[in-house]
Every structure is written in structure tokens, then in C-alpha cells.
Image 1 (cartoon, rainbow, N blue to C red):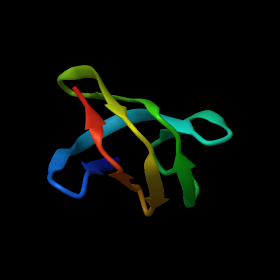
Image 2 (spheres, rainbow, N blue to C red):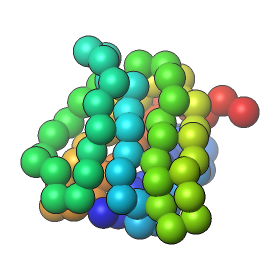
Image 3 (cartoon, rainbow, N blue to C red):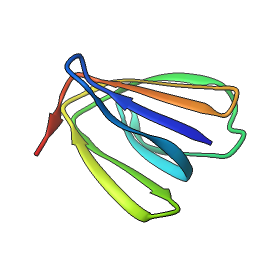
Image 4 (tube, rainbow, N blue to C red):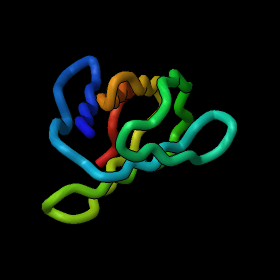
Length: 81
């Protein structure tokens, strides 16, 4: 699936991943290929994703994630680090 992580200032990541984990407002959740459509608020925490280059983590201060048609867009308030 295609993942984009954006902040108001820049594009933090864009690429193909096999799995992504998000710090949802109601708890952590994972998204895999062909996941059902969803929109969720994110709380401060770590977005983890696994692509061809291995596993990566990005700390976010909150935001929104949208999953639609095998594309995941994260609109993060900001990233830490």
C-alpha cells in the first residue's frame, strides 16, 4: 500500500509499505494492504511502518490518518526529532 506522511511544513515520507501502526485516539491500530476505508484521529506517539528498506518509526504530536483505496495519508500536526 502507498503511505504518505505530511506535516504543514513538509512531506516526511512517501513510499510503499506492507504494514503501518498508528497511535489512535482510542488506542494503537494497524493497517495492512487493502484495509477497509477509515479516518481516525491520532494522538501523540509513534507511527511505525515497514517497507522494502526495513522498519521505521516517526514520532508525531497528533494528527489525522485516512485510509482509502490502498492509500494511507497521515496529516501530522508535527514530527518530533
